[in-house]
Image 1 (tube, rainbow, N blue to C red):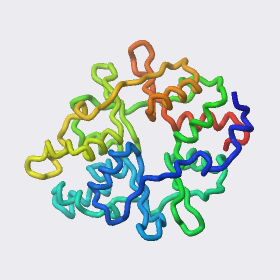
Image 2 (cartoon, rainbow, N blue to C red):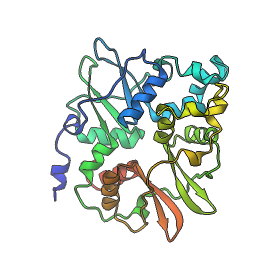
Image 3 (cartoon, one colour):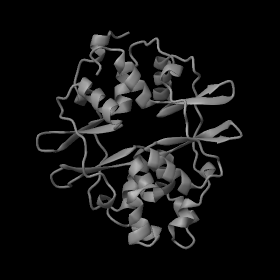
Length: 291
């Protein structure tokens, strides 16, 4: 067992991913989505291919926005009059975030935690004085450190109880709108009070990046893509928590299963959702130097 002081020693770069998957601003949107899918990552730093300086970042939520959730959808709906194939051949610079919160290699773990908790940003690029990308640190990286110490808090103490849910036959277009308007990365899918699964922004990215989307294209219009029932996009096993599970155990379960959230089940009823963000915020708040 690590002591809490040991837990918070070190710098951002010491827990970061150093070999960062990235893309140039000229890459097509579809190519960027393919890259996210191929490498199984939620965010893709966009860098100048010559200097390696950071120019922006594309996240799974940006892709959801582009597909019908928010302002980025105008690229499909307005500029290309709904033509999905034309829009995904635009450069990724059209939908990436240009203003990116960054850290320096010498930033402390406390700096990382503070930014995550205050801004709800799930991944922060690390750049040097020349703005050259040197790494990326995520909620998951922080959680690996924080779960080394035991907490007496239970999942019921930190979970979100008031949940927006959708039904399995809900079209993808509705899911992208709800996710974007509420800034959610995932939505529980419920039928007759029974949890059917969780739809995540990553599931939606995978639908596009795997090429399965092209099986649905008849006219080439975005409606061909977005009418799919959400049940067809839910992937993988469903891992759950219960209200009395310790948040330390919940964090370790998330890390072991490679998931970003756990639905909380009491009996057979969905009573809440606990996320990586919830656990980072709770575990860090228990330590005087964590924030």
